[in-house]
Length: 459
Image 1 (cartoon, rainbow, N blue to C red):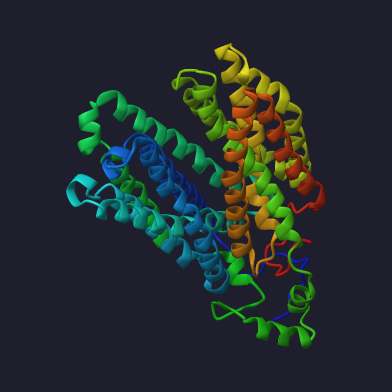
Image 2: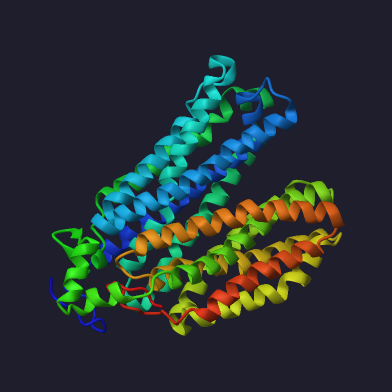
């Protein structure tokens, strides 16, 4: 292994424009499939899974059980993030990404072929939970792996723009999943929906899976992984081997061995907590709040999210491009600061009687406080972490931050709105989430254009 000057450009492992295009489409499709899987499942849990899989249970308990099968996937995601992240850092990104998307997609497709409670009894919900666990296990490393692969493929001065394509996958999934269920509900009777119509979205997801797997079969390994100074014959050196290299005055090995661990992860976790907390509040809880607490029509918040997701096709790449031009840290500070400033007036609009104000408030907050931050997150985390543990740290930070915010946030929001019957607790929560992210942004160094082959973290 030769010692690398950490200020030089990556070595001979280069990729063509067609390789980059294939990696970009692979990342977009993988993220789209991940969010499509979970969006299809969450909507099905709310609309049809209670009578199909929990018919002999009291209505309230049945809904809880249906949602619990949705929730178990998050624990599996964290396990998958750690297992596949470690594997991706050790033996390469390509093989792991093929395996994760296969697990995730096949499990989702098989949900559409499950027998119901009426056909096989208690075995039906058991099979449903099993597939949900498999789905989550594969999904836990999917978006982190796609982000890692795409940013390691991208030219140094275009990482923000190209990396943002991963974030666009979430918008695609939101639009497709919501549109599919809206179409089924509109065109089919309740009997048709419960007998066979609910299977269509799950079975249809196989088309996306097939295309994504075909592309990943022809995807070359990350050039950064191949050019890492600790990779020999396609496999990373062990910790002991790396310490031996450091003792021999290998600069790259000594840099990673001597670094204090955890600081970059802590900063990434705060950035993730801010974005994911805002997302759970705006994209998920506000829908229930507007319908149950304010008595608005169900179509109002869902249509607002759909419109906002369409606007996001401009917001996400624009923010990525701006971060390439002005840096990750200034953009984080700008959007997290704007999110904090907009929290009270934005929630006031959403809590007001005017439907136009509600739609406008959701669109502004969704794009500023969620989508813009997601665009930045895709590339910033990859640049924060060193090449030796990038996949693992990125995956675990995303999942831990997401689980903490999505598990705790809705409970707190529901409790506060039930107690005060007002929008202002939600504004304070949005302000708090944005403040946590802002502290992380203040602590982070500028990482735009960082050499991704460096083994150590950025701080």
